[in-house]
Length: 269
Image (cartoon, rainbow, N blue to C red; front, side):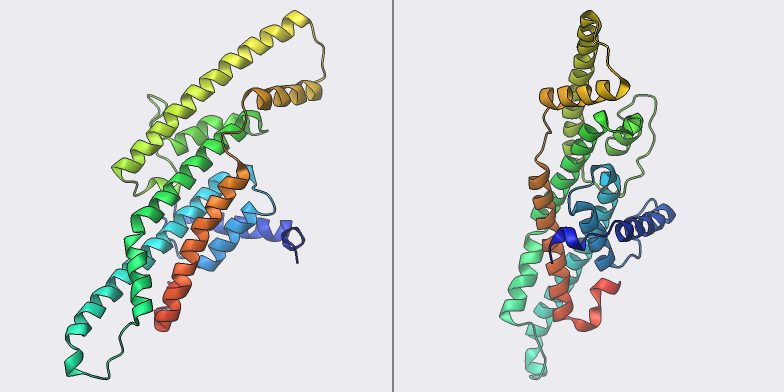
């Protein structure tokens, strides 16, 4: 069955509303008790059949929870490796002791080794989603919400209005990650200023031409001219592919750990 045939608008809406209600009850933490499988499902319903740009803020919160699952899996792997090292020394006292196989050991070691790489993958996806959403908002029906979302993505971007961000990914950012987001804001700020200047010049041109258009025609003309002047900063297909790669990394990690340690029930924490 194809992806489009599986997509259920009402089902997606119900999942999204449920996740949102949970996040509203725990706004300051990504450590909410939501089943990981449920979060993966919610994310993929936003990504498929096509990325729903208007739900990027909700996607960001879901991704923050996925990274929390990843961190927990890394912690579990580190603990397992420590016990492996301990029991290797104690093996002579209990020859029947069960240890990790060489293959299992290499997998756990790779999870710990790749922690920084996978975290960077996550941060880059988060950053690019923020920028794509700002681009979308310029011509979106909800464009009036641009300032609110800018503050959530880049807290402190409006001097004198230091309102804390409500997004989960903002909690626990390292100094280098915050610097990366600051650089993204500077890029975003310059782009928005270019858009404002272009809009002003375009309005003057329209007035000089004495063009009379209906509101709908004017909106369509603006959107077409905007996209011609300012192409999307990212390919949506490539961004979704990067996001899928990250989801698959974390999902496979958790599934494999559950196979290694059935009693741990990582997906039910």
